[in-house]
Image (cartoon, rainbow over all chains, first blue to last red; front, top):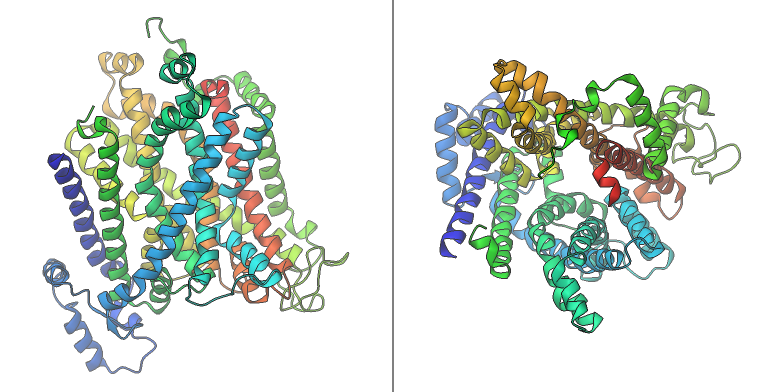
Length: 307
Length: 297
């Protein structure tokens, strides 16, 4: 088990390391002078531009810049944000709890709603219930997340006036979490259904039925447990997609997380913040997938012994 | 697997005689998802091609009607905050949507196909490095890669199409790679090696045609992902710019007017959802035709 965790950690570190290379190269791929583009909205003299270039280390060769950047990152220094007017890491850490609250609650909604819908569809396979559930799922997959968000906003905040339109309290979390959760739930429903259909056909389920166990016991103790294995294995990737989806949804609901910050950074061409965001995003996703993989290996011994 | 599988020895659908292709179209129409998907995509193409004939108003003309007018006989889907006809803008928007689909999928499909073919064929360390890189990019998610591209290129619809195309390369590379791994172990491929086929011949004459059917399915489904992503970027203001009648962008201008003019939010959203659904269903239908084993499920 220790070896398995070590392997996964090394893989995560490689991901983060590649991210540091990618963000260093990013600023060099910008056509034109990144410093001038970055400060185009400010009154700056040529001398000031050169001073900024020197401070950012952009007058050095790429390799030197990379080593300098890596050195600073290892000390927790991601540079200084123009938009936030404070160190990039501080800006990101201030906003991250909001994003984490959104993605975790969305993940719970997605697993509960999507998982039950998929399980139900598989159990009723071939019936009108199955068709209805899967139609719902494919409509959910086809809908733009942000449109679902606007529809929910229109229905619950404007027409029924049950929930506030924008803000940062917990009531404001309901609609964005529901939007992101339902959209992801549609994907999970499709995954769960096909996993469960395979399980229902297997011998151990038939045996459990044949030896006269109550139906609910067979469904929940035998079938659901093994059916969840492939679904749990997809959760790491789903979490990454939730983090990505949060970028758009935060903007729909004016939810002040890192996603909203990232869009402001792209508009403002705030390169230190963009670089910091990408690195931060990659790190969070990599670490969460290690945690999910380890949890998964604990549940299913076949994984940690590599069979 | 004792009996030889006849389909494995047959050339892929791409090399099939015309008669079989017609049969494929008929099979596509016979599957419910294929028929519905094809119909939706056909409507989209017709709207794009004949937009000037279908749209009752100039999509860019302001004050074509009163501002924020609800749907009526003259303005089927109402008007927006500048008095432009929403229906006409949606019809013209079909052109942009098709462009997005073709350009973004074209970029990711071509690059992903080449990467996957090379990695899968070469094996050894080039494969390990390439696929490891693909895994890493995959975990960055498409939207973050697209944002990074837009940070480099600057905002705009064409840049958004390129960004989405680049962002999806890892996905296509991974799928191509997995198909190549399967094809490489089939008897026809071993026979070609034994017959002394050159490296290029092995890749482009033997592997490529067998990868294409899968990629047709994935590419069709990929159009829906690209359309969704582009609408998302335009919604954020990073893609289409005013006055382009792009559906995602139309939604972003509707956000502050939802209570007063819900039609500005409902119709462009429906257009995106139906288009995406169309390509999803068409992709499912094509898969059923190309892979009959799926039909039994």
